[in-house]
Amino acid sequence: MKLIKATEENISLIQDLARRSWENAYANILSKEQLEYMLATMYSQEELRYQLSQLNYHYYLVFDEANQSFEGFVGYENQYETNTTKLHRIYLVPESKGKGFGKKALEFLVEKTKEFGDSRIILAVNKNNAAKEFYQSQGFSVYDEGVFEIGNGYVMDDYLMEIKF
Image: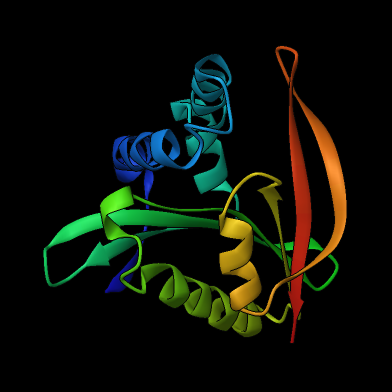
């Protein structure tokens, strides 16, 4: 596996990977309407183009060298808060789960965070998402909870997690 820096040319690929992973990850958590709203909002061409233009916001594509296929992506922002990188998104398509890609992607994120000079990574994970256990297995711990309005009458009910180094 390798991680490849994403560019604007990869927007449609990111959108496809997001849809494939979200339809699996959130099928039993979010309504179809909320899922569609969030995908349309968070992964619009305009939003992705804006994020990719930001100096401290990075997207990397997870590429499986053995199968020559893209399996997911990581989106994070250095200096989101003082000395803190925020993992905004890490998603893998369903067929790639359990192959160590998520663990390697988080190791890559820790390395990049340290290179930048941040000493903490934060993330938000839906309270009903099994990914919470994965993050805990990688050293993250819950430091708070939050309910966030995301528009159109929808909210995200999340655990806020962190790892410090």
